[in-house]
Every structure is written in C-alpha cells, then in structure tokens.
Length: 351
Image 1: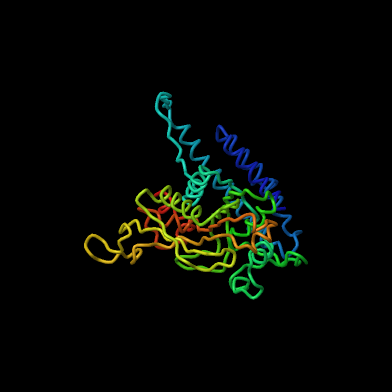
Image 2 (image 1 turned 60 degrees about the vertical axis):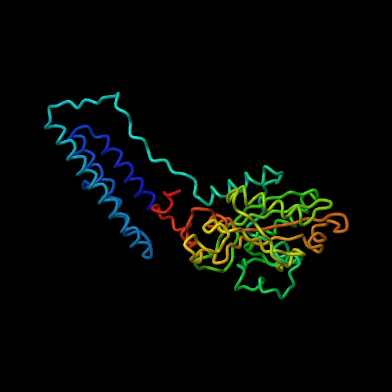
C-alpha cells in the first residue's frame, strides 16, 4: 500500500500542475479527493493492513492527503490571479540567466589529488587496497607479535565473520601499511607504490577521528638506502608545504621498519624558530618542528613475508595521515580534526 499511496500522490501532483483553468482543477480534486476518489477509496482499505503497519500507513496516507490539498490550494490561487489579470507578462529573452551554484571537491579530496600528483612526478604508482582486511596483511606479515597492543579490540575494529585459517580475523584496516605485502605479492621489485585509502581506529578527539585517510609510500629495489628516503621526504615537504620548509628524521620504533624514524617538518608559523617575531613562544609548535608521521627502512621480515629476498633487495616506507599534513599546511588554522567531516557549509565554502 505504501507504493500505491506514493503513486497516487505523484499522479495527483502531476495533474494539478498541468491544470490550465479552475474547471480542470476541480475535476482533478474530485478524481482524487471526492467520495469515489482514488485516495478516498485507498484510505478506506487501511483497515485491511496488518495492525503492526497500520499506524505507519495511516501517517503516510494523511501526509499524502495534506500534500494534495495544499497543492490544489496553491494552484487554485495561481489560476485565480491569472484569470483576474488582463496584462500579458513579457519575457526579455536577452536577459542573462541565473547561474546555478557550483560546488567543489572536499578539501581532503583536494589534498589527496595534490599528494598523488607530487609523487607521480617521481615515478610512484598510485594503488588502492581493501579497507576490509585480514589480520595477516595488517599485522602478522608486518612483523607484529600476537600480543601487540594494536591487535586489541580497543584499538582495532574487528568484523564479525568467519576467521580464515591462514589469514586470521577480518578487520577494518588500521593503516595503509597492509598494502605493502599485497603490492609485493602483486608485482615484486622494483616497487614504487603510493597507496592512499581510508583507515579505521577506535579513537575520537580533537586530533583523531574513527575514520581517516593515510597515504603510504613503498620503494623496493637494489641498493635502496636511507639517503633515498631522506631525499624523497625533502622533495615532498618542499613540494607540498613550500620551498622554505625543511624536514628532519628522528630515531623511533615501528614493527615493520628497521631502522625506524619519526618525520618532522619545520613550522610554517615561526619558520622553524620556535618563537615569533615578538619573542613569544609559537603556540602551534613550541619548538620549531611539527611531527608529520612515521618512516623507515623496510624490515627484512616484512620483505620475506612479501616473498622478496632481503639479501638482494632493500627498501623504505612511510605512512602519513592526509588530514594531518593538510592541517600542517601554511595558512590553514584548523584546531579540531573533526571539523573536516562536520559538513558545515560555513567551513567548507572557505576552500
């Protein structure tokens, strides 16, 4: 009956709008709202509807009736005015039309396109791998021990499904690093991969959202060293943030890289000084540097998991948040990451 009521509403509205005089309009009104009208007869049949759905159908029927009545009233008023006036409205076809509002890509999408363009210029191939992933690709093959905290249900979203005997549980991928093993299996070295995708973690505050975007870089070839990694980092920083920005790497620890590094970018507000021109501390960085994300040389165990001989090939990898590098860009002052997904036009129209 729901489809029947909606069909009646659509038919009635169509005929009402097509009415050219008050006589046509009155005939349409009787056709649907008269004693033997289509809507009147349909409403009488509501008593045959199962009790559990009767209230829902009744509300819909009432809404359809009110909509038709309002449309008839509006059309009656319009036709009455038209009948009274003897003036012929003239349209100047030379007047310019009203341009429709045109939207634009979301600023996160804009950032993804810029990042892609930067890395494609130096030979990286853009790929994308599943957002619903197996534990094997997200953790096991990346050298994570079974008791690692990242495998806890308070850190990772687990999917209710049958566990794979070889690949383990199904999860929402917590990082784009899971694409490393899939890329090694797909083509083998030489590899220059750029994987950009959504990631999911159980975090929500001013600097985290349960869903976010990451871009993962992976290079594997013969004689790849930290020098190549540092050069790639510097190239990206200057291309994306500006020629005056600098990068640095600090020793760190990640399960899937050895050695591992945290990557910092010089602050665009204080130009890496840590202080502003008036001598006060920079509120954005406080030390002249902003943390961008992780990087490092691919761990030999990860190469083995991907079927690559670590004695013949080496590589580097990096993984950074798209939203994070976007917020670090010069002139963009966003103090809450969640604002990016608020769908507030007052915010989105600024970009």
